[in-house]
Length: 471
Image 1 (cartoon, one colour):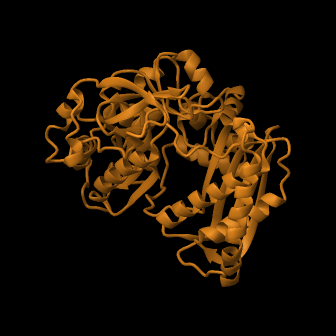
Image 2 (cartoon, rainbow, N blue to C red):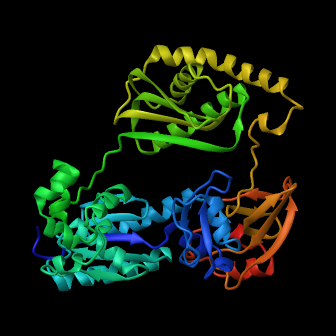
Image 3 (cartoon, rainbow, N blue to C red):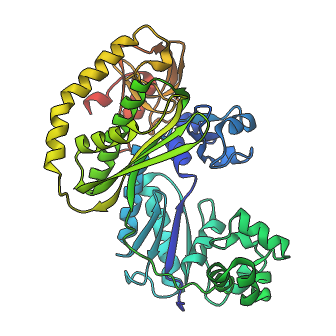
């Protein structure tokens, strides 16, 4: 293990929720919960204000609403989060060529490889500067842990939350870890934690005292040896710059089970197109198409088909997913659908015959879908095609008269909008419109930090004057 604390771990603070608070002045300092808002939705992130009520990530949304009924509940805006993540990762890559992203808001950095830190003092200075740069560029805060290993750097960032910096000096690791719960170690989840607790082991120091042989007896060779090494603060894992994805996939959970077969086919085609968009955005192609179907009784079926060569052609992926769907019984209803591509490659070796066949059948597929849709006109809403214009809570809109704002909520043919931007000095005004108002349209997210040259935008929004359109 290193003798100097030159591994840095950054974790953005309540990332999605903090981004929404920064974008919406009326929500700053208030409880905000981001996630799926349907009856089967789960919490993606909760602001620190919402966490005081017991709301946390991965909690069912219904439970969150019971704990914090007055919180703001918003649908994620992943495009905005990705843009902010790219800015943050860019700052990290200025520090070192070895940056290992773990998610949109979390990464390890090898400062030694970038020659930006070589001892305790230089590493601390880098951490201070990084937090300042993140706030300047994104308007958000991140917590930083710095140590001689990845495990300890991550523990340091957890200790630093929110908006702090913790540097763990080499030689102090055992004293720091000893009294902490075994759950702080990588690889110790609820099941392993309970197993150790039943054996009388609840702290990291008690793992070290038990010895490797006892850990192996309790947990098996690989897991036991790994856990014992971690308890002794032995972690030689390197920072790996490229974490190669093994697959690309998208899936949707539906608030109401889908029973109509035509609707299921249309949803699968839509998911296939979204999957290919992600595939192309990553400059990859894939050879195996995977279909995931979770039925009304929670049984989950996965079907896959391996093509002759890697592809990033949406027609080929759609056709393959459609073939896989034919072998799945959806009679009782479908609650989740997913389409993925695995066996990724950096090139394409298209099956020209498959593409030609798909092109020939494209007209037939469209005609069949349109004909089937004509047959269900006038039936219950759940079997109708997905409505193009959905006003999702928290998403950006623009009104021809009132300018930029965001959706507070919608229902009963109405949509409520608060007109404010990240640059507004005070909370914006609220107005309600018909959902089909021709002057209201979806909009792209605005940067959280006001670009140079956009002076007056905030004041204009607050007074109802739309100068941003001409900026």
